[in-house]
Length: 280
Image (cartoon, rainbow, N blue to C red; front, side, top):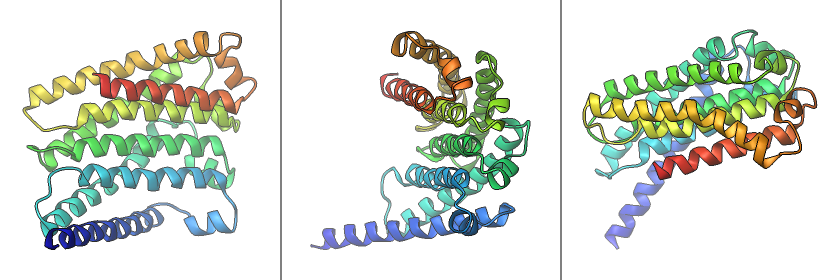
């Protein structure tokens, strides 16, 4: 009976902590952005921001789970550790938004596209960017043997890898991602955002786990980054030639703005990344 009571109290306290962290995440977002989420969603029906903020709250949840998983050390110590690392993760998530806005979709103002133009394609990319950054952060703060310094180091490395991938993605597509998204091509935004999430799944594998040594953990991270740069071109080719052999993926996304093709590319990329996560 005492064990059951402890489990109930322990679980309830972690749920309450999560609710508090969601509130903190929202307040921090409101403080750091030139718009108010409530007004944009309820008075202006801004779907682009809805997609972005859904990614933000989903990302907050991923970070919390990354901090939560692991052996329990008692209610008080669990709350301190999970709360502290989750708060660090939320701060890093907001830093990631600033970095990614400047270095991923860098040819235009993300805020203008989402708030002024209600560009759902930009919202889809921000959704993917939030989730991807959260996967990197969750991996960096999860595991035994490290500390805040190792978490920050692998977060930074993962963020660099994500930016490098974004540049690679733009190179392997025959159209300019920025140009298509600025033209309100939601299909291009969904495909790009989904591909980033696939990258995040693999990078989470590279940044997570127990910290053994810098050489050991950096070696694992390097292998997973290599997989990232091999995965996406291969997946796009597989999807184009095998899944939809009677159509041309790039044409469906660029010229036809086929949202279905964007969702399929996203799903196939994330599926491949998930299989690699568990297979390697």
